[in-house]
Figure 1 (spheres, rainbow, N blue to C red):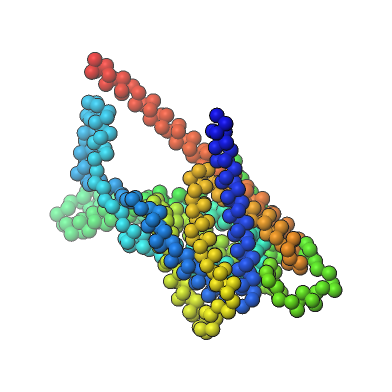
Figure 2: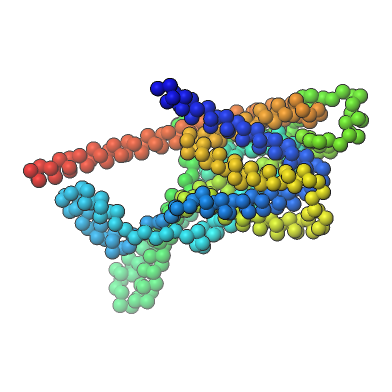
Length: 469
């Protein structure tokens, strides 16, 4: 009994402690990256090197992680579906178990990652999740500070929510246009049939072909909507209200961070200003002159790119569930994209030379931490505690950044940045609460549907038992 209690406590404490350590390490590496960018390394070169290290490690690790697994997709032929629909009720009348056995007989095809739809998705994920987002993020970091990185990173649920609303609206508009076009074609085909088909044979076949193509397009679009579930606004529900309020709060906090810096939380004595400028700093939290507004805009754009990547990733994982293989593939593609972009931006070969050994060490540590350690910890905590456990620790980065900036750096952290980031964090938790509440309501509706189906099947089972007696 005591051992079980200890295990339960450890199962609660261990993920919490590990996630706090992950956020602390992330902020520490961000400060080290700020130091490296301030002391001369190009942000574009830094992104290429770190992602190259991560891709080299992630590619073999993904095959070890999914060893022994087979990613299969189930496909049913038209003949099989016809037989199933025709004889399903008869099989259920004989024996419900036989009905389920018949349903499980299908064609299993091993899913390949090297198909055009998946390769296109991987290209998009590499572009949005690596090339665009990381180049913008590190360039924005070089213009601002780690506390601004935290503030703009907390905008991700807000931006994802707004993108989801926009995507749902676009999906509905396109689907309605396709359905209207199909209805018009069906009406014209009906008019042709009513006039007589002897004079309109070729035209009739063309109209039928168009009708079939539009029907297929509707089915493909509905499948796309199933892969990319979008937000639905219901002003009467508390979840939608919480997400909208959180969105406004987060945007207001981000604007506050951009427009108001305020005094330093820990100013250095006036007599030490010249002395601090002469001595080279081992770590840099804030550098002058800064481009605060431009840095914040670049970081917000990076968060937008990550939000797009998240939408594409969710649909990709539904089609190909082996997440680490997907991650290694888009990481490799993103590294190649970063290399091409960086060669254009940094044509001088001297910019690619690492002048300090600590820069090389930082690149290796960042690549290992981002590709292997953090991703595996997040996957493990998600499996243990659910999909909303890991995002709830994102605002703890603000706490670490504030503590580090106040305790170890002078003339580095502004009151306006701290206050604005706290406002963004409040909106972040409001949006997250709305998402959690919406997921709970969705699960309750699914349970109610299952209960209704079981209630409908109960009389049929009773009739079958009476017939057998």
